[in-house]
Image 1 (cartoon, rainbow over the protein chains, first blue to last red):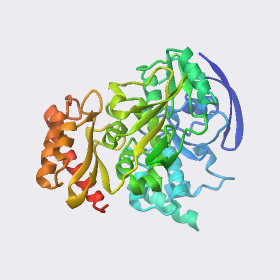
Image 2 (cartoon, helix red, strand yellow):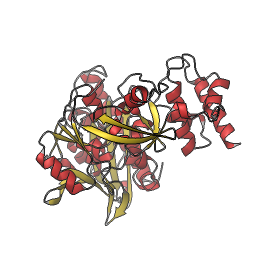
Image 3 (tube, chains in turn yellow, orange):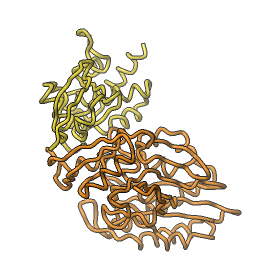
Image 4 (cartoon, helix red, strand yellow):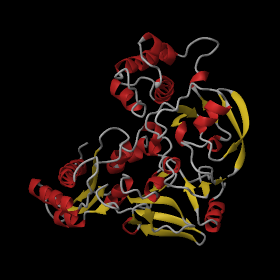
Length: 157
Length: 290
């Protein structure tokens, strides 16, 4: 067992902690920081419910150690809304009915933001490709695609 | 799921990393971690020491030099996917990287990790066999070059020594009319291949196949180089009959096992179909098609 002091900026706030090397980033976020918007779904890097941004790159935080994020900037769903205003992707999911049970939604939104960052005006196929690492068991994806399209338009305004 | 405890080291230099590996026979290298961490969580792997090489600078690059495409072992799949050089000149590699896992996993997973992990279900090994790639291993005495054909010694086993790190992958730069393709059947995005086939060809005058490499994924204990299929196609015009014969020979080279992805018969038939498609696409690309 080895302990490590880490310093991670999460949604703009600097967080310092002593962590066991085997602590997964998703557990650090949920249990140490109490940011429970990042979900644990399959816990085997298939479902994408645990998706967060590390230095702007979307990754599955169930397959990444907290110690690896030392010095990094992490963004979770809690950091999307600014001063009570929803992020365009959140607005898109609300307006287009992009969720039913909502379990996959935080990961879907984070993956979508990373997609739109790289490709601000994606085709439907590119959206489906971009969220292919995120599983939804309710919607059939149709409204999720519409939500991402809504956000893409909104973000280009 | 929580992995077993381990000591974590994040060296800043290759020399340091090699020294730690040399001192700890139970140490494993952490590259992208997308296979290793999953195995650790399932407790199928329990390294005493994890040597994180993500903080070593200079291990991620894609460049052409001296007739080779040189790729740093820590290059992420997503970087291969977005590289114009790879897309334009190395279609087999571009095909392969795009069908590995999913976009989020590809943001972390590395070419070197995919090879050094040596899972027979991984995709790059067959592609590198088809390319005739060379792998650069760096150890305490410096670098040595391992032809990819000598690299995979068994399932999850390679010819890397405990204190060696795979640092570079070298793919011969194509010249003349060359093309390649990777054909994979997966049940869904992110699944391992039921089977997959990599093909790289070079055409000479009158469309005669001058060079050909064919690699098979997940139909044996290691990736398989379909040498009989290659020999049958070499020197022939790449017509329907010649491609069909090579596809048949490739399916005979496969040594699949029955599992939930399919029976032995199904997988052999699949290798035949995928080989046919891969060669046909590779030839089409060598002739200037997409």
